[in-house]
Image 1 (tube, rainbow, N blue to C red):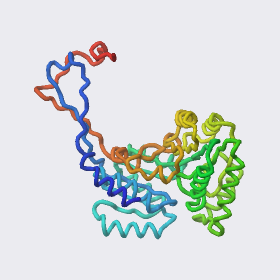
Image 2 (image 1 turned 90 degrees about the vertical axis):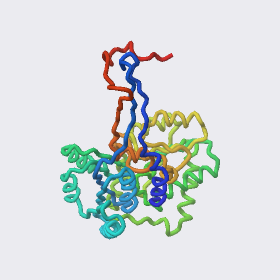
Image 3 (image 1 turned 180 degrees about the vertical axis):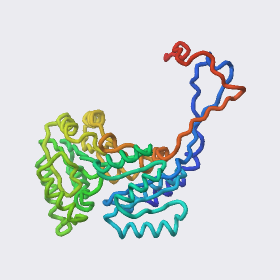
Image 4 (image 1 turned 180 degrees about the horizontal axis):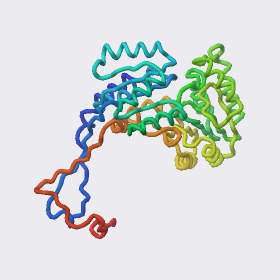
Length: 361
């Protein structure tokens, strides 16, 4: 994934970093006969900090750093303290191959506070919402812009009318996030809302696939704290599960699924919809506020398109920390430039004169 992202940026950067022309919408009567050229220049912000989480310490230490480097910045990576061996390896590799461009700062909370206090030009944080509030507040004191990738209770709606092959694909995708990835990553299906007419079929396929796993169904949590959190979550439905539990709730139709999601999820990072009805798809996309939506596909396909960014909204985050042109823009200063073409671009009259602006046909 990281190597693909590098190749993607290397191939498109020469075109993407060119000045972007803007239309000149200053009304003609106000120009006094002098035209101007307008453009957006992307320039590096300076030094960017990437604070990575424990669940994907290598990938999420490097993926946001790619966008930061692509924009021309220097980068400080703060890997998670819960995986010190990974942190040490990252530090040694970056010192060897990226000296002068990337610095890896090991440590815990005190390291984050020290980095923020030094006054960076942008900070990206991936992790839980409660810690994100503290990080954002501290950055606010320094007027440091922040990008937050926070996850949340990402729901899935499974509609009626799916054939057996489609149903098995849906179950397999969900099972892979809960077993092979232990549910401990931000794109995992948090809970499933299933049309009441197919709950039995869904559970039948799920049960058979779990049994087929044999001993591979046994999931290792990262540590004792994560395991204890799972045991408490059996009784709580408001928190993000982030583990190998899968609540299944029957619903009458897509409308009830949407109502449930909007009562529970509060703008999740990603929402999944599995349906063959175009009307249900449109209704789901139009009425579920989320950072991202995947229809008839899973998280791995969702994050495999380097041209598409991946980010949250509201409680699930803000900004775009990796992939795509949005990732490049996130860590760039978007400098708007006006250049008088044939003399001094003076202003005649006031732009508040609405009569000077062209009317829509």
